[in-house]
Structures are given as C-alpha cells and as structure tokens.
Length: 534
View (spheres, rainbow, N blue to C red):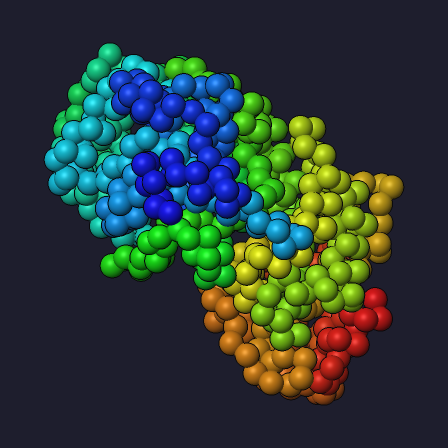
C-alpha cells in the first residue's frame, strides 16, 4: 500500500478500514492551480490533522471545489522529504478515548511549496498565488514565536534587519517573506485578503498585524516599497487580521500508531528528523475533539467553511471562547494536574485521571469553583466543553501528554488561569471566596512543586520557567518536616499580583494558601494525605 496519489486508488485501503477522498482529485487540483482560495503557512501536524481534514470533508460533500496550498517558511525539508514524496497525501489517525482509532487518507492538499526566496520555482509560484484575485485567505500555524521580529533581549531576529533595508526583494525572515508576498498583492490592484493566524495564542491576529505593520512602516520610511503599502495593510476593507481560537491536541507521530499502519501494509512510514530537528512522518495522530472559532472578517469573501464545523463570529465572542477555555474549562485543570502530577510521580496526564483523589479535585475545580464565574461565549456551552475535557480529552490514553511538559512556565500561567476566577468571585455579591478550596490549593502545590522534591522525598527536575531564579530561593532552604514560620517565608511572594493575578492577601486567600502549604511540607506523603482529605 503506497501512500501516493496513485497508490491510494488500490482497493486495499478501503478493505483495511481507511476513509478515502471522495472527489475528483485531478479536477480539484486543476481548479486550485488556476484559482487558489486558501494558502496556509506552517506545514506541521496541527495543519494536517485539522485544517486539511476539514477541507477534505468539504470537498467530499461538494461544498467547495478547490483544495489547499501549503507553504513552509521555516523548515523546507518538511516539504521536500515528506510532502512531495507522498504527493501531499497523508494519513490522519484519530485517537479516541475508548482506545479505538479512525483512519483517514487526507488528500485535500493540492500543492506544497517552500517559502524560500532562493528557491526560484517555488517563490515564483508563491508570488503568482498572491497576485491572483481568487485568493481569499492566508492562514498560519507558525507558533507564537513565528511573529517575533525581536528576541527577548530586544535583538532583531535573523534576517529581519536585512529585510527592513532591502524591501520586498528576496526576503530572509519568515515575516519578511509573508509581507513581501502581501506587497505583491498590493502592487497588483490592492487586492483584498484575510490574514488569519490560527496559532494557539491570545489575540493572535493582533500579533500578526503588529509584525506586518512594523515591516510596512519600515519599508515606507526607508522608501524601499511602493508608497501606500502601509495604508493598504492598515485598511480592514483591504487586509484583515481576524482573531481566532484553536483547540485540538495533536501529539508527535507515535510509534504505536506507526505500527498499526505498518501492520495494515502501508509502505515507507518511517519518520524523518530534519536538520532543524523537526520530527515528521507520513501520518499524524490526534484527538477527535476540535474547535476553531474565527472572527468573521474576510474582505475578499470566503467559502461556507462553517459547514466543516468551524465557528464564525465576532471578535468579542472569539475572545470569550478563549477566556472560557483558558480561565475555566481546560487550562486551569491542566495546571492543577501538572504540578500535582510532578510531585506525585506521574508521567502521563491521562494516568492522573485514574487517580480518584485527583479526579475528584479536578471536577471540583472545574464544575464547582470555575463554572459559576465562567465567561459564556454563547456559541459553545461551557458545561459541554468541560464535560469533554474531563470525560474524553484528558483521560484519553492515546494522548501522551506529561505533567512535566504542562508544568513549563507555570509562573506565567497562574494569573490568567486562576486570577481571573478570583476576580470573578470578587465582583459577585452572591458568591463567597470561602467556597474556593482547590484553587488556592493549586497555588500551595506550586510552591511545594518549586522545592523539587516529590511526595516520597526524592528530588526531581523542575520544568523550564522564566521566574525560577526568583521564586525558588523563597523556599530553597525548606526541608520536609520543618517547623517554620510559613507566613514570613511566603508572604512577599503571595502578594505578587503579576504572578497570581491578585494580591492573595487582599483577596482573602493568602492565609488559606499558607495553611495548605504548611500541611504539604509536613513530611513525606503529606501531599497525598491532604488531597485525599479534601
């Protein structure tokens, strides 16, 4: 069984239970070549598991008649070593919480290109696509870092300064390439288009807009582009930068999944690790649940993508969906499981959901403490969302997510994931902060986690976090079983509203966190004892 355009015509695929493309591939490819409507930057797993599969469903159902173009601007080997050898065809393996799998051959990607200005044929084709009036949307999953023009130290990212100076000619940086292509659209009758970030970060459209705008400003100030370009990119009737909220877990291609496919008889499944350390395979594995909520701002129109399960709404509602997820229904539960899991010796989040103590507290944190002040976006029911998280998504044994990974950068997450709930309670006269039990426990567990000692008294490695050098010294000399003045030790830290979202003492929760922390450090086994008693 060959995973190619011709190979998937074999009857073996359907006999082995694979869902196949149900459209005329040659006809769709020709139409896409002549009049592309959607180009996506970022040829990684989330794109192949989500957007490409949505488009395949729309093609199968006759909702659209053209497929996708994908471009990769960071790691060109993904295209050269994985997409092109398989004619852009891939396998999506949907991993269900029951242990069952669904296998889909995805063939909706009609063209794959390297966004490399030194690759003459690919770059020429990209310019051609961007000056085509048919192009309606340019989407991105290039990670939040992809939009940065400067690093944390304020130093320009590689290629950016050269691109500023040279203008829209043979760009080197990722955003420089994107803005050069957008400039091509500008000089060809100022054609309208939607620039849609689909990366998992807050107000993602603003991050993309800021980067594009800075380029346009620099180019106009330096006189290296056609005058009026800045006005074009800042005119929402010409170029829009919608906000989106995306949610789908797409882990690295798993060896167990590879074996399932190999046992079916699929050839050449071996993954490739590129020179840039990207791990890619001819297949992707992902959970079934998925959400993509998009601000409906498309100056050149769009197809009926809502028929593929995507949500189109206004900016305020996109923001509410994100707050629902990040502040109540998913992310706070993950953080609780992350810090407690590290202390209790877990290495899989899914396994923690088999722990009756942790499961009980996760449910209390979400349903009893979070939902009373949840931001309700209207288009998705928070209760339904959290039901999926607790009963389907987190317990999924196929999702190899670890508490150690989720514990990364916890100091940067506490404010939004828990501070907003505290503020919600403070605004409500009918709710009491005394009802919050698990939420302050999370703060105490984080301090206990920072000791780097598990519940058996053994050391473990803390996950990366930019504030470790500041917060670890606060509890550095505490030993399990110590009788200490907890208040004097941690008071200054608990007052830091930039970490917790509020001054925990002013919020009336500081003393409760102190009490929990004192119990958690009382000796080996104290963490298990406290969570079992709550």
